[in-house]
Image 1 (cartoon, rainbow, N blue to C red):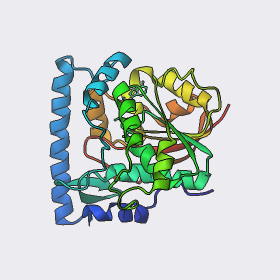
Image 2: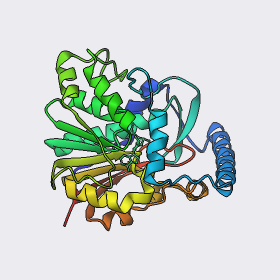
Image 3: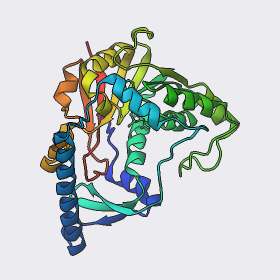
Image 4: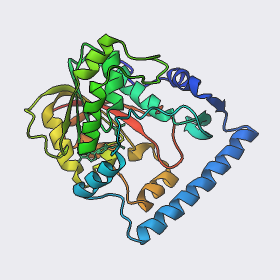
Length: 304
Ligand SMILES: C[S@@+](CC[C@H](N)C(=O)[O-])C[C@H]1O[C@@H](n2cnc3c(N)ncnc32)[C@H](O)[C@@H]1O
């Protein structure tokens, strides 16, 4: 059985450029950081509850999610959100230990997990559901120019941004793995990505079995209200495999679950996903855990 999950050593090499420091939880600094994390978690739960009691629901209907993202993504010039390497150092959970890292390299690990899965499965076509401003697909296209990529997003502004990025002469992803501006060949691969505006709960414009591999990155968490329809559509449009990088309940401890509940946010376990016709190949749990909630990656086969 191949090992899809990023190993501990792979994660450590991905986060190294982010001034990552491994702190064993048993030593005095580790205990101090754990106390700090716990205090922060209690604070987040309290503020989540206060918002929920004031009626600020997090799981929104699709039109409200669209309004929200259309506002967030509206920009005068095309932008490529990076993977943030500067800023304050923060503690992340990592197995029993802690990783203190600058910026937000957790997302780098998530996309590296998708990349590793692509290398192992060698799909001919890959589709991201909830592709946002295009950063994941643009990165992956620059790494795998031979693969046909597509992305769907609810927000018109997100898709317009992706199309505008495709028209630029070149792009600088600021990724350690892709240093400097993209080459003309890489830009050609970026221009070949199909970006579509659509609600993932209704992909009826696409025929069955359109893409070998479907994936999501922190997107199903925004689709809670329509998740059953989205999973049915992913199952129909996908041909072989999926990678869902989402905050599944299994990897969230009691305090993180309480936080998710306090915000009325994504609360889905893997059994729920499997019930839509996905058979788990591996559940990858090596992604560093942020304080509010934890992401893992479910790699599954599409079955009848
Ligand atoms: C947190 S962003 C993540 C974007 C991207 N995956 C990334 O990692 O940069 C979530 C995205 O999901 C999209 N989204 C939310 N609900 C959706 C739906 N029902 N159909 C399609 N996209 C949706 C939002 O517009 C947003 O771009």
